[in-house]
Image (cartoon, rainbow over all chains, first blue to last red; front, side, top):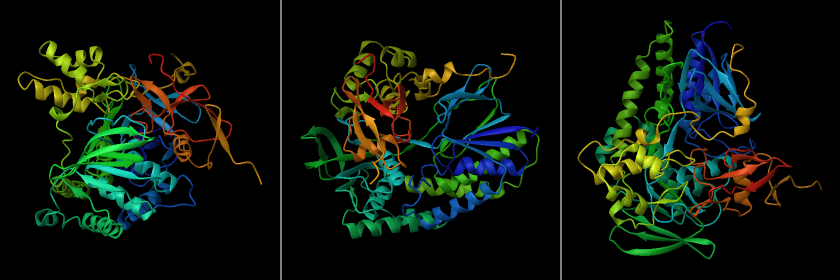
Amino acid sequence: MSGPQALVIGGGPAGVSAAVALARAGIDVTLCEQGPRLGGAIHRQPDDQTQSVRVPRAHKQRWQALSDELAASTVKVLCRHMFAGIEATGAVLLEDRNTGRLVTRRPAALVLAMGAIERVAPVPGWHLPGVVSAGGLQVMMKSTGRAPSGAVLIAGSGPLLVALAAQMASLGNAPVAVLERSPRLMSLRVIASLLRTPAYLREAAGYVGTLVRAGCLPQRGAFVTAIVPKDGRLSVSVRDRGGRERQLLVDRVALHDGLLPNSNGTAAHPNGPFLVRAGDCREVLGGAAALADGRLAAQAVLAHLGKRGSDSTGAELAMARERQAQAALNTLFDYSGRDPTELPDDTIICRCEGRTLGQLRAMLDSRDPVSAREIKLNGRFGMGACQGRFCAEWVAAFVASQHADGSPPQSSEIVGSRWPVKPVPISAFVTLPPSHPSE
Amino acid sequence: MSEVPSFLFDGKAIPHTGNETIAAALDRAGIHTLGTGQAGCAGRYFCGIGACQACLVIVDGTRMEACLTPARSGLTVKRFVPVSS
């Protein structure tokens, strides 16, 4: 094909939706997914395709329809291909995990639909083996088709806690407890706001029904204060709504405090392709919105290329509806995590290099104000292998809380934006072919 | 009966189903500590999507996320020891 080329990164609903819409308009589209198959976090199914995990009917229908459209399209799909960034000449770098090589592309447009990452607020012991993010536990469960083994505690805040607990119960190992930090219960006002998106109410009712039968409804207003290793297991200190402390001995702890766009390294490059983000990667609104946002991203690309797309009114209405629903849902949760003033100095903040809250406090005490560069280069917060994905946002908020005046550094300033956006083995570069013959 | 498919993790044979990641196979084998890590943060499975980099292991000589890398028979997987640890 000799027409304009578009590269879409991320094989979840936003990416597939954008890819299908672009292909329909005659664009030569390549869709890259880091995993072995498409679906994203929401539509993940066991790697062994003879197995399956139960999903809400609305999710299943939505994904089936989209998969059918993709199958009938001209979109080229590359699995196990990861976005590694945009280099100085504007070339898009992809790490092909099948061959262990970096490949370069020079598309006219790049759609980044890499979903969300989880917020997990620091708590003493959150770095221990056996402590996972709730999404991480869900990935393990969905990709194996089995409930995680042993006694599992789920804690934090957000709708994912209940979804995960119900999915575990359905697979035969309900969690020993679900601790939801927010004391608020579903209110009539929230239900009223969700009437336009009844799928959420049906989904919630399904999960709650499963949890009632399993006898593990969430304990509202309860949270984890510390996790310590004990006899090869994890001893978890839990505080309930009335302030009472108790200990639970478990094998795994799943933590979750909401979702953030997976936007590290997604800034446009002056020499790079026209870039647009889609789905949770741009704004965390969930799977239904991701479908619509993928279409809007495709519209933006088509407009940039001077091509006419289809009418986007429907997608815009869907986005407005989903934004309202998510705003209503979010009033039920408390993503703030443990109050930093309650955290001991030896609490790990940077999970990659073991940098502690005490070390961060000492940095802030020593002089005033502290820059984003100092936090990263001297403090090494946001410097480790995850590149700040699990600490930068928290560190920025903590610094801001300590220095209310002035202009405290933003999370994005601590992280920076440069390629590779995640660690790539040096062997992948050694074998890098020239990106075009003249180089 | 045919031999159970397996890979080596620090010299120990770990069975796998042929349809799972290294992280899933190690988890089923009861192995949760995947490396020495840095400053007391041992290598371990956490996010499941390659974002946190906590589950890095050495797969046939190359650093890889255990959560993203398919388990294959004959692989030699080792615990990751960072140079700075």
